[in-house]
Length: 222
Length: 222
DNA sequence: GTCTATAGTTGGATAGAC
DNA sequence: GTCTATCCAACTATAGAC
Image (cartoon, rainbow over all chains, first blue to last red; front, side, top):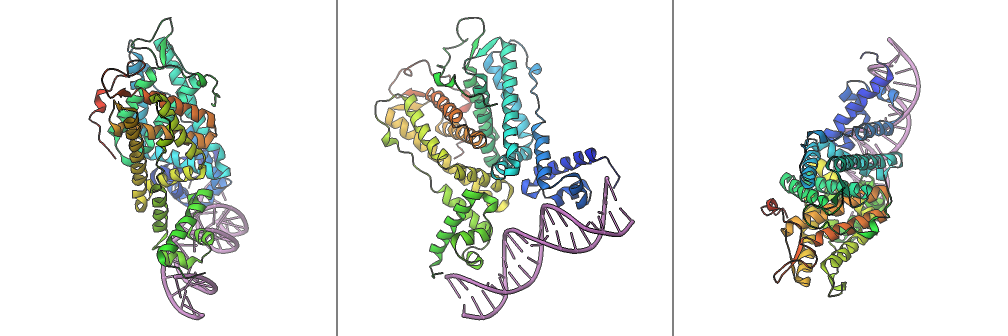
């Protein structure tokens, strides 16, 4: 109804698109549905965005640029690496299970970006953001606990994201929150074996898992 | 053109749907496109299938029921668990990278099944098949190498599938075959630490990773 | 800036001739 | 069983009044 500056209107429309797509799927996020959700008429959307793809790209960007920086400060000091990783993973897992529709939407966006040239940047942006976020967290953890990772940080970040993605997908399908949570906890314990103390000697418990030689030359994809 | 028994025609149409969807994505697999691909007219498809969803379900079933049983026989005897797992994983990874479109389609199907009630069984079938296949392979490996897994087989299968899914998705987006292959190899080595010899004592190398207690009571989802 | 009206496509589904 | 013709719905996008 009211006349708003374009930028603001765009923001409203992106948010509306996000609502519709999260609730009903990416295919349901038609220009019409978004207009209805935002309470404006069809023409307004086309006034603010060149076409539907631009709207979807803006929506995708709104998701990928909202990278929740994990709260490491809430994790108390003095805990072993294993526990810290479990806690960090649990936090990440919480935000996923609390936003089922959004998680599903992000996979739908990934698939769409792989089929439509106009959205080709979306998938890459998604992973760049996730990898960077994981690297950031892992680096922060390493600094906080005075450890270092025995595999390249980019590789480790990739492993974490792969595990989370894999378990998330399975959870979306079978809804078994317990199985996914436990699996990720197991995974966190594995990741803990990839850490060693900064100041000399060996890891706390057993010998760390042998570092695969060929991982050292990995492309730092992010 | 020719008059064929319905069952046969259905098979042709399913194959045509598979071709179109693999090449151009699930959204491109319209009834019209499938009919064109099969070289029949629109009406024929609706004669063989009640509606589009039934066609898609048949297509999905054609994928999930084609579970390539891994060739464990090709793996020579006398190799350590670690190497056998790496080889098995490499084989699995090969079939994925050799069928990029199909892999992407399977994720598109998963997403679709999560949004459309009529396809709700598709996603479950996909995972049931994959988990069962992974369990089968892992059991066969255990028997062949005279080892046992220190976590429930269902849990282990779930871990494997999650890792493969996670890395596959990332690979679909960034195309970095090397990073994904190496990551999965690293993962195979981890999985090897979850094995212990059948006849007494400890694992070959170091102590096996501590078995997480809470994993013992896991639901055997498959 | 926002609205209504409409053009132009695409796709699911059916009817009826052959 | 197979085909053509057609209906109907939903969508993108634009034009033009307000």
